[in-house]
Every structure is written in structure tokens, then in C-alpha cells.
Image (cartoon, rainbow, N blue to C red; front, top):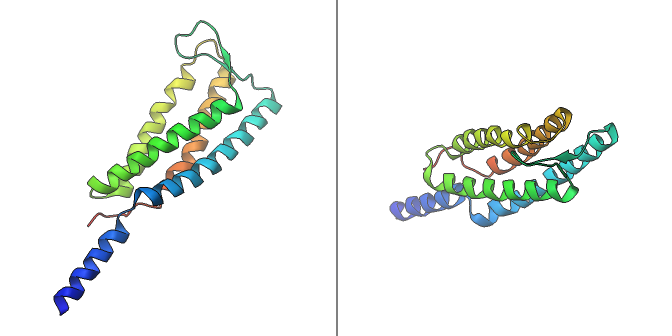
Length: 153
């Protein structure tokens, strides 16, 4: 009798300790919406301050306009892959929260290469776009990390 209760409790603990794709997706959507709103507001402030919203991809011959859709798409893609990474680490890492925060922080640092290396782009725009990456990460990473267990059992 005690064994059945212990097994049931262990199964329940494992199920609640491991996030499902649905729960991570729900929090990912919430983080994506919040980050998109924050980045769009940030972009509006930049435009008001006179930051040129023209940037070229590394190696490009001309700069292209950076639009609201560009910001929203970037936030969506990063949040989607962040949720996939969170789910993967929840299943394989011993300390999923720690692993996710370390990996996503490293990936955020790598993402800064793109705006900082943008061709035919004003330095103020490069720094401004890098700030948008950091703002997005500051919202999305904690939102997803809260859904992960500290230790996988």
C-alpha cells in the first residue's frame, strides 16, 4: 500500500516538474507579446530621438529600412527557438534552468554580432539595434526560465 502511494507521488512529482510543450508555448507566447510590445515602444523612442532605422546585413552593399515587422519577426523567431531550447534542456539537462539561462545568454551575446557588424549602418543605429536584442532577451529569457525546474529528477 505504501509503495503504491510513493510511486503515485513520484509519478506526479515528475509530471509537474517537467514542463510540457503546451505550458512552455503558452509562456513563450506571453513573453513574445511582452517583448514585441517593449521593442516596438523602444523603436518608437529611437525614431523620435532621430536614430536612423536603416541597416544592412553584414556584407550588404546597401542599407534597408528596419520596420516594425522586422522587430516583431525577430522577437518571434528568437522566442520560438528559445522555447524549443528550453524544452530540450528540460528533458536532458540535470539543471535545466541554469543550463537554459547560460545557453540563452550566450546565444544573446552571439546575436549581437549581427547588428554590430551591419554594413552601411550608422554607429548609433548599430548600438540601438543591439539594445533591442538585449531588451528582448531581458524579457523572454526569464519568462521561459520560470517554467523550467531547477533540478531534473
